[in-house]
Length: 115
Image 1 (cartoon, rainbow, N blue to C red):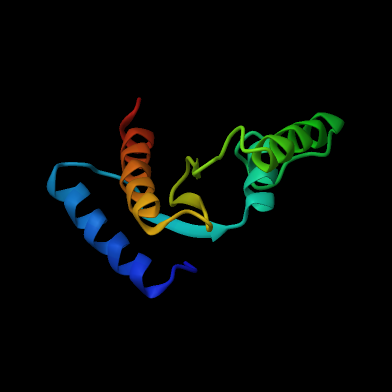
Image 2: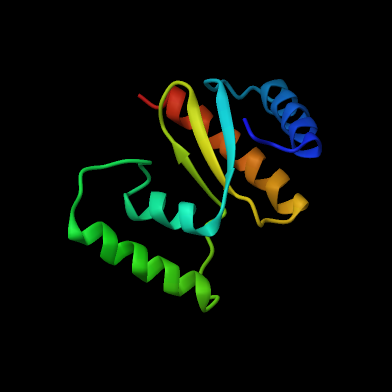
């Protein structure tokens, strides 16, 4: 994990609350990334790597322009596996990061328990 101290403390606290209310999820690894990395992962359909195809480049350009012009922003991407990987936009404000973390734990609970 590459979380700053304050975010790591928040992650621990939020994870404790999530487990206290009954969520059951795989170990979750949070990574802070920049907008270019987020757009790249999103253009690959949520996978960090994938086979090469021109369509992914086209998706990346569309997302890059949308973010540049303020038309959209991706706050997080969660990879459904064990352990779960959550990529968060490093430029989010602290309160946004905390909300995103809570949201991610709910995603991970759903991933683990959805038959």
